[in-house]
Image (tube, rainbow, N blue to C red; front, side):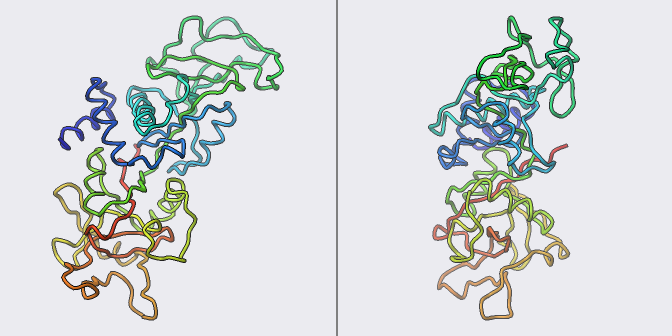
Length: 346
């Protein structure tokens, strides 16, 4: 079943439309990954977009996007310019419903905006496709189709209107890729770009369960080097909403699983994905900031099988909110959140 669901995720991320039942399976896999931990936060991330289901004005929606940690800062409203990204918007909206939260308004603030003839003095009733561009600078392609009687051009001077709000220069999109332009003071749910490397779940699971959940949505348990740590720490704060704290260094909420393991050969650490292992080079391994052992000059990893009778040893990796690495146990007594790795953006 997992292999089947992974194939569905790959098809969806490639922009190939799924049947209703296949889409339902894909949504179920993502809901299982998060385990209901996002419902009260109001945001629903997948690998390319973050969907917010709370209705906001255009300025509020855009500002909210800017707080999202991404590879190319800052984030902004998403360019839903191809079938792949539209599929991810559908997935994120459906995920909101699956996790017991409202899907929000049918129309979602997107990153399409009017860049020419966009002032009261220059506005024209003659439609020009070149007036509209996505936030990444690309033109309106074949995906986005205007709804009947759109785009509108009327200037409004109602009580809610403030200078820039008076013209319908920004665009909402629905699940079918249909476009409405609207006034900035109107309130809609929103979709932000998310080209971060990591997806993080606070669902408390073992390392093996975390690996399975990541692979169940077509991802892998995260690969993290010292260079990746600043981005990972920012992403942990965004997803987990916890401040850095060393008051309880082994509290489960302060740690997440990542994909390192030496289960096959003691002391030979590798990144795990499905049935394959990619060895971590000595150079990368030596740069990882391992947790220091209290009152000792020694550091992790220490393979502390000696601490518990009958234990098979500490053969999997975790990282703390402080960015410290530690080897730990893959057993039911060690449950933590985890980080999955998205495909790198091209």
